[in-house]
Length: 105
Image (cartoon, rainbow, N blue to C red; front, side):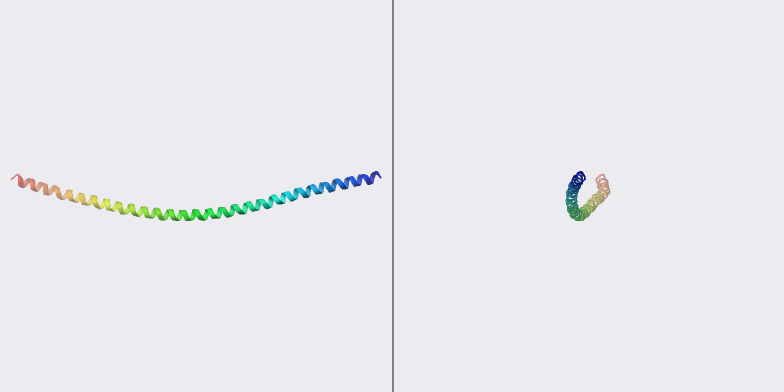
């Protein structure tokens, strides 16, 4: 009789331990599935952000090229204006000297 009671108690303890292990396994599996879902969502968002970053980089490069071109054109115009003023100054000096020489006669 003692042996039967002990066996039943042991069987009950093993059964309860099995239920606890099963419950923990279910929780772990649920957490794992949730973790995979979160990871998939994060990967999707990362891909979206990477695509947006690429688009912004391309747009920024295009804008930078346009600004650089405009600056080059403006710089060229400033150089041309400076050269014109320099040329005018170069011409004015001999003309002024010639006029001064005639006036002094």
